[in-house]
Image 1 (tube, helix red, strand yellow):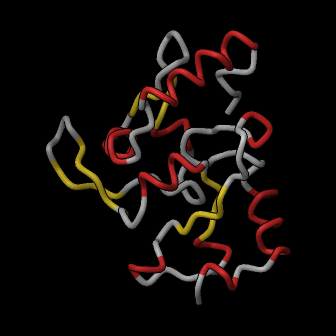
Image 2 (cartoon, helix red, strand yellow):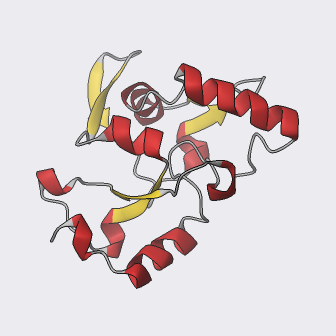
Length: 142
């Protein structure tokens, strides 16, 4: 199936299940200027389908950097590990916030590899988080 085969009902279900926020950086829909995207956890190019179990929400930044990646390098171990699976894994077991709340910190091999692969602390994301902190919107409760 292609991404165009995802019905509006399925999109709405995934958005509701994801709490209307990115499964990776936790950006909330109401805080970003573009719609959150339906993300294929296992990309279509790697055999993933449009089953609800393979879909989650991602912000444009996380989804763009993820692309077809399903694995990344853990910088501590130097090993290739699976990226975070937002449907099956708990965010708090793999990530945390820096003391300032601006940076996402990888707590596990999977978390560290995902932070790097998805460039979750790129300058735009960090700048936006600073503004969210100033507005009292960040860091989110998980």
